[in-house]
Image 1: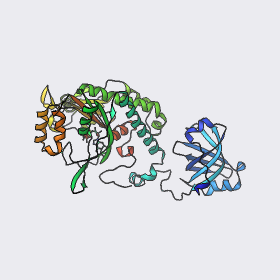
Image 2: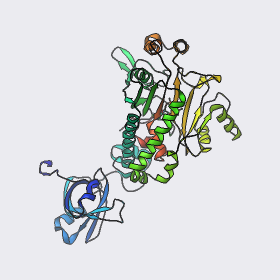
Image 3: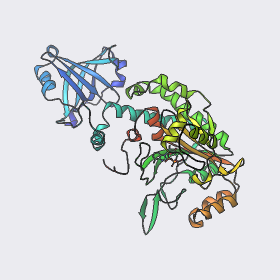
Length: 438
Ligand code: ATP
């Protein structure tokens, strides 16, 4: 059937270059309205959306009847017609159709142009991806990954790939997925950081970008079991400089979306104007101690030593108009490799970046201790074996230097900038405690 289809088609995104010309496009139907004399076909082709107009007196009887009766939601077809400018429509263009050939039938498409429950939509994620909002969200995701590569390239970073199968885990094994690995056990990586530290000693500034896995039982709007992280690691770098890189990175991503994805942002309900303030640096910095005071003054029941959950993060973020760094948390609630805060030895040198508008932590970062004895002791205290972590110790044994790094959750960042109520909307096929299909 496909053999007789010519593939010299244009795409909807190219329509602007073909005004007044006759062209062919491969499209799917997303909606249809017709009367006895005219049919309006809403079309998509993966690059965009626009309207096709079919007038009874300008096509054969057969084609007009085909459009009225045999084309349904998501029917795929090759259409021929002339591109017109259409200032009233969002795309700015439409096509006056002269011919239609059906390629793939689609009867009873399950997703209609009405409200569906979220579980239904997630069960049909393989089809739901074709709808407008998921389409826009996936384009924004792709753009953010591209901008990430551009940003780090401009700042002298080398992209570096950490393994996904590991024999050890940086922060204990409770949240780890284990997999059979021949006659032993392996784990799915929950962070590329430790390997990134090895990378930065070789390449000075590196970043990883890839999937990470956490067997977290938390059913929140901010947690998935598989999510993507961008994890830069920088040798010869203290925490202050790392925080500057973090804020520059976030501001860069937002400016890049304003410049390249204004249409997609509008489709998901995020105005470009509302993003502009987040491109202005610096972002405020508040110590953990000060944050506790602010929370207590605000009537929240927290004590020094507590970790922050969603209500605390939202309260703190609400006090500022921009993302805010919370610095130097108590040692007990942070990872073993963070060095002691010289101003208070109960604390470590680190910072989390909280997004405004109720989206909570998007980045966790810290300086990494480069002291051999400190790290050896910490490994021992945490019951982490020499067999698994000896290589990590080696990074301190052979020419160690001050270094810092951070991890940004891609879907957390995306959910914030696209104003999604759950991060699962920002990944093609979400994996959560109760969802492994499709
Ligand atoms: P949280 O306290 O919010 O669970 P965390 O302190 O465990 O996060 P880190 O280990 O510092 O997070 O991970 C770095 C970043 O990865 C976080 O700032 C967040 O953006 C993202 N992240 C962490 N866990 C998840 C998850 N389960 N799903 C999606 N993103 C996550």
